[in-house]
Structures are given as C-alpha cells and as structure tokens.
Image (cartoon, rainbow, N blue to C red; front, side):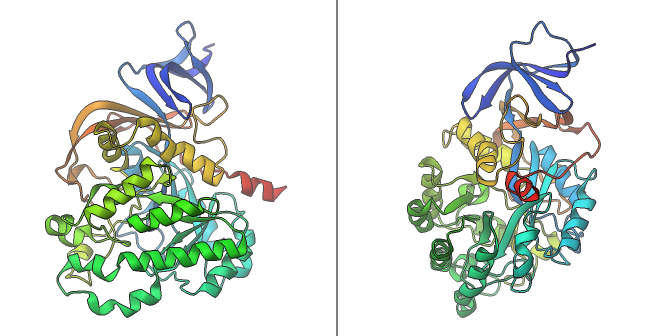
Amino acid sequence: MAQYDSIFKNATLVNQDGEGLADVGIRQGRIAALGDLSGDSADEIVDCTGLHILPGVIDTQVHFREPGLTHKEDLESGSLSAVMGGVTGVFEMPNTNPLTTTRETFEAKIAAGSNRMHCDFAFYIGGTHENVGELGELEKLPGCAGIKVFMGSSTGSLLVQDDAGVEAILRAIARRAAFHSEDEYMLEERKHLRVPGDPSSHPVWRSPEVAMSCTTRLVNLARKTGKRIHVLHISTAEEMVYLADHKDVASVEVTPHHLTLDETAYTRLGTYAQMNPPVRDKAHRAGIWRGVTNGVADILGSDHAPHTREEKDHAYPASHSGMTGVQTLVPIMLDHVNAGKLTLQRFVDMTSAGPNRLFGIANKGRIAVGYDADLTIVDLKRRETIRNEDVKSRAGWTPYDGVTVTGWPVGTIVRGKTVMWHGELVTASTGQPMRFLEALAGKV
C-alpha cells in the first residue's frame, strides 16, 4: 500500500518561515509529510520542478451574488473563477437578496455551497439594526466568517450608518467584525458632486475625507467597546497612516485594484473602473503600497463584485459599482512580486498566514503537517495575457483585459484534490465550509 495519496515533488515551498526545496506528501486530504520524500511511495506523484508551492490562497472578500442576483454570478460560477485563478478558499459577503442576516438565510447558503462550490468557503452575516440581538449567536454558526457591516451604502440594502447602531453591533459580538468604511452622511451631502456621464467624478463624490471620517469614527467605537475591527478595501494614503497607530484594535485589508489602478483607469475603462470605495490617484496608490511595505496592511482581498456589461454600461451615476477580481488576484499580485513591489513571502503572509492569524481559520493558512492540503502552485516565470474570454465569472469581463503579467497559477489543490491544473478543471465541486477556532470554542 502506498504511503501517501499523492506527493508533489521538486518544488520550492514558500511558507511563513521562509522558502526552500521540499516535497509535500498528502494523505486523506491533509498534509502528512514535508521534506525529501524521494524514497516514499504514493498513488500519484506530481513533478513540480521549476514551480513554487504556496499555502492555498484565501480571498477574504468576494461577492458571489447568490441568492437573488444570480444573473451576475452564483456560488458555482464565482468559485470556478476562484480555482481557475489559484484561490482555494473564499469569504463571501452578505449583500444578497434576501440579505444574509438570519440563521435561515445563512444556513441556506451553506447548503447551497456545500459540494457545489469548487473551493472551500465561509460566509459573512450582515449586521443590521434589526438583528443585533441575535448576532452573538449567529457569529458562532459553523462556516461563519464573522459579522459584516456597511457604514456606507454600496450594492444592496445593508446599511448601518449611525454610531449608535455600530456600537450596539460591536457590543453584541465577540469575534472580529468587518466594515465597509465610508461615511454615509457625507455621501448623501456630496451627491451633487457626481457629474452625469463622467465616472471620473466618482472619487470626487466618494472622497478621501468620506473614507477617513468613517474610519476615524469606527476606530473610536472599537476602542469604546473594546472590540476588534477589520477595515476592508483601504483606498487612501491618510487611512494607512492613521491605522498604523491603531493596529491593536484594527486590522487592514487592501485590494489588487487599489494597488494597481489609478486615475487613468477612468479614461481607459470608463464605468468599468467604478468601485466603492473608488480607485484614486497615484499618490493614494503609493500610500497604500507603503502600507503593504511597512506591514500596516494585513491581508489582500479581491472584493470580487461582478456586474453584467449591461449594468456597467449605464451612464454614470446609474452604472453599477464593482468589478471582477477573484480570478486575477494571484496573477496581478505575482506580477507585482516580479516587479519587486513585494516579496513572495509577503504575498503568502497576506493571502494565507494573515487570514489564519486574523480570523482563526482551523487547519488552513500554512503548509504544515496536520493542516488541510490546500496548495496554490505557481510558475513565477510564466508570462500570460489576461483576457475577458478566459474569465469564468458569469460577468465575463475583467478590468485587466489585455494586460500581460509575469507569474501565473498552474495548480489549485483543495484538501488534497487537484481541482485546477494548467487551466483545466480536473475535479468536480467538493467545496466545504471552513471552520473557525472562535466558533468552535463557542460550541463547547
């Protein structure tokens, strides 16, 4: 009998503790051995000479639109896009229809994703004025990534714009909560700054001050309640500087599009560059990169937020805010690695070790014996051109159409099963909900 189900041989392993040549032995969906396994047997041996094996990339912010908005995306198509891009796990957001704000709507999504999604998953539950009394129990449900709160309006109708409402939510929960941080009161006051037909006015309306005002309020509420917050998709240089002084209560997410695009995107892409919070100018992009370099930024999330071409083609401001991103997160960021903007180890820290550290994901986020065999296998030297026609999202487009990158995902391994290999789907859907240490503790 073979010692392992599979061995991935001759690759450079990259982990939180460094990188080096090592083989990975997998048994029953978990990592069973690391090191020189040249004398060992396996049912399948995969030669990874010239490739790098990373801990499975976890995209901690995606919108897969199911239920209710499945003309844009659903759990199956969104997760297919994920695994084709080297992503082994996702945290999915609650602004669906109906909203994911009750035990019933949450458990329906868990059932809909299990053995249908191509990657593993967790779902956020939306925090509202109405469900605040139940949040302490809801956040402990199996497969729950935590509570998500929109302080500024975006896609969907989830909104808690007032300090009293946010404070009540923070007091009701124990786990780290995630926030869309834009000041809704200021957004309402500034609506007149939107120029019909001109999406470049989007960052004028949703200004840096709108983001900074809300983030300041949010940090003050976290300190007042003694709770942990996670500030999503930071888009301004000022927020990065401010949050550096509040890392004890606030963790920070950045997105590939805020690290890659700038104000010229509105000329090239029009409404296809429209996001909440917006893509801003080169100075803000440089400030976000400083946050990556100096460690203020904890993790990367794609904020994959698909809309159809018809919805994006409406004249601004009727055009929808959001862009695809889960399939391009790995290649876009590997291109930045090759350009010297961040190290490969820092990329690993922001996409696997970081999510594990912030959210306490059980048995994921490291290449270590006993952990789930979630692996993202990449060819750092491979040059490819990103194309709309290769995007598996139901939306069918990417803001990076025609962009040539260096560094490409060639394999996605989820709990020991090869799901994607060299651009082909290999294994049928076997996605399962992730487990969280704080939720497990709540069950005792």
